Length: 284
Image 1 (cartoon, rainbow, N blue to C red):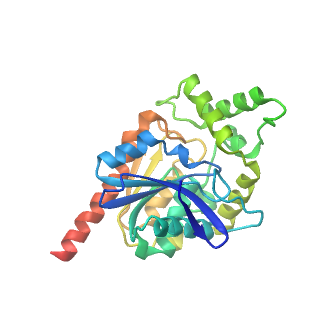
Image 2 (cartoon, rainbow, N blue to C red):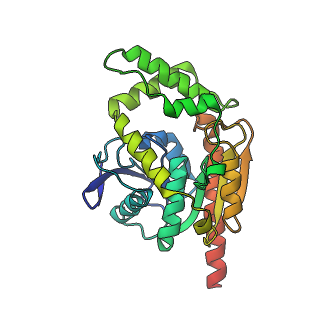
Image 3 (tube, helix red, strand yellow):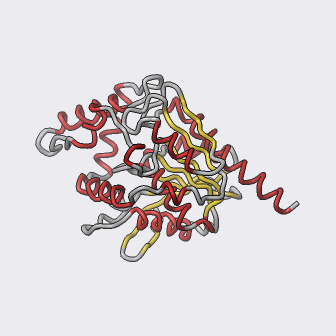
């Protein structure tokens, strides 16, 4: 696969539908590889007429694993580097969880590169807009078992976490969860990267004031039953961004199971369509 460069960091990326006129850049969450945007999901965007670009954030997957601290701004710059490598001047951007924070930072710092934004199961960085249930918080705060010491215990722990934060109305099967856990471990395993990414998120602070300056079409998508980033995060994000559309989905938690593919695609393409209508009016 191709790689983009941002200074000393190299970013692994992949593109689908290169013949489509506009691109959607998909940005993932904490410790999550680009395969969390499965090819089947990307193909749905292509079927709607968009090029889909996914990538591994720094410190995950096949991208560089820096050993020094970095910022959310650095991660947003990584995303811009992917656009440069893909020869995309402007893109629709969509991010989940930490990825939602990255696309917010990207829209703030690089407005000339962004056509529309979809912030999914994310938040503003404000302390009062980041709430989790105790069980969901434990998913982030309790480290997994050592897979080299007991691989089955590691797999069971990862599956249990998927159930804890997952979407109650859109559950994965046991086989699907096990297959995902094993495939992700075999592709790349970097628990230290999660710590550095969490530090980057915390250091970015509250983006509310900056989000109020945005002037672009935005859809904010959030699960009504998200236990990890409760819906107050989505509500605060939509309230901060002028003209943002808020979509609260019953039965949705903090994940992207196959049953939610169309709901995610609808949100992303709704923001993109609003950008297209705005552009047409400007040139009329």
